[in-house]
Length: 286
Image 1 (cartoon, rainbow, N blue to C red):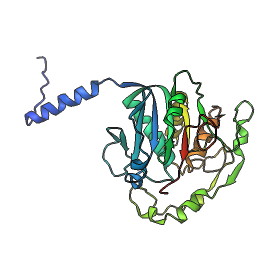
Image 2: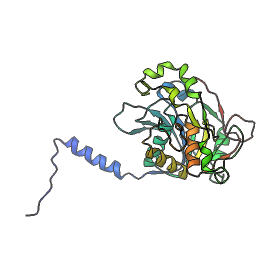
Image 3: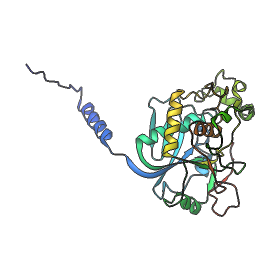
């Protein structure tokens, strides 16, 4: 006899919920030119996210998305309006993990044609210049931002072995000296973490973390690389004999160069007299 599979529902609500879930699953992704990704945190919900909130939810079909970490949430992510809550540590030390996980989930939610404009949450934008940058006709590179020394980084010139040059960087050590309460925050997952053990990193330059652009190709590279190390920002890299992942912008540079992606510099991103400067970095409420 041919078997018949029957699903038994305890009530009509359960049946309706399954139908709604099926509809949600079948819902097509929204197509966007790109994402203006603003990395924030619970600490700044009532300060930076209110004072420096962009006036629109979309610019030239670039969706504005704010990201907050919530290590205790059950789901991997929830998108509420234009705020993406992700299951991730909400600490400064874990910023790279927050960035790459948010990109991964945004690629589930949207069909992204170009890439991501990664931004801090303490920027005042020149929205006219922002639109100029986002325009489809504007040349965007795979990894594009503003370096402190005004130089590109070409992987055809710099060999991979140059990544083995390392340095001690006390940036995070100094930061946490004035943010001791972060170690007690359950959303930060920093209990028993000795920051000073992870201060050696590759001695490289690249885009300043205030604001920079990464293409779909660069985003895929970031996701693949981070999945290979299980998103562990304290991972010891045997190639460089260092800890490349604790400072987000330095880590992005390392991942790009390790995978053969060039960095292209432009002074137009922040805090310069360039006539097309996109934003001013306030560093307020730090």
